[in-house]
Length: 437
Image (cartoon, rainbow, N blue to C red; front, side, top):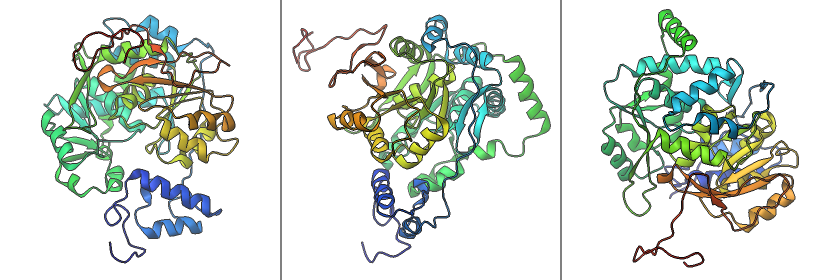
């Protein structure tokens, strides 16, 4: 790399990835007391970081007001899951039960729309579903981070009798091309704002359809139709068994497509709800990317089929913004990787995480350092560790929630309800006894 100037690009010239940028932003914030707090994706060139350090960034985060309302009853999410997730249930049937009960109560929050009610969200779902019905293909690709628009598009796919294919924009060019080709997706749904911020040149060759354009120039008759449909709340008579197509990371070979059915996901959530004491007034932080099974099932589907409220944030590495959101929206629940939550916990002040009561981590082993850090920063918060894989929707095991009880370190708990585990020899495939590797 040549001379560094104010126009030097972190991605194109310095080859920084999102983790590098998150580390840089955290370092600047810690070194300059008056630094601004811009969104991570707006730090594109060296000059942007200089302005941040000077406290003059034009992209300072300003959070929209957040005011929740809740139902009077305080039933557990677990009880609803046990009652409504039957062997013939789909994500849509569970979505309808949850949203009919919520009616026009607040449901979700993000930095674009602020608080949205269940009723407003449902009208938008019907609006987009009516547009998606015009595409003859069954598969619709979605390339978006954790946003309310992403959840909206996924639900619209079901109402339009489509199957969402979740694309990972952080893959290599070869791996991404393989994923697109394997599913023969005609369009990729994304956001123009997000697409510009990704700044990956080779993505330009793919046919992108921008979410903003879907809702542009809608006629009054289209809006009235969606409003009427939301009041009737009719569901498609026949839905495909497959709920989503995800892809493995491709760390050892090209990514493999993983098709998960509605029952795969719902029964997994039912089993998880059986060991987690989730309440009616729970507020979940959803920042894991929905192209991962953890992000899709827990951060995306769980709030849509239950009374859990959800706060969306697109960047899991932006600890400063995430901590501000926890404090601003009075979040109670986080599901995360240990690395992402450790970043939040390290940079949070003493009051920012005070509303939290439960953190569930997975996808990697939880280090001792995070347990130690939490005992100092958030001693009243319970940390549960679990284990799962994409092909299993994804939760396999987790520690059960018990208020005030210390969780055993180094344990991922017992199998969730409805799950059986068999341990095999990796060479011979023979079943091993307990205690054997």
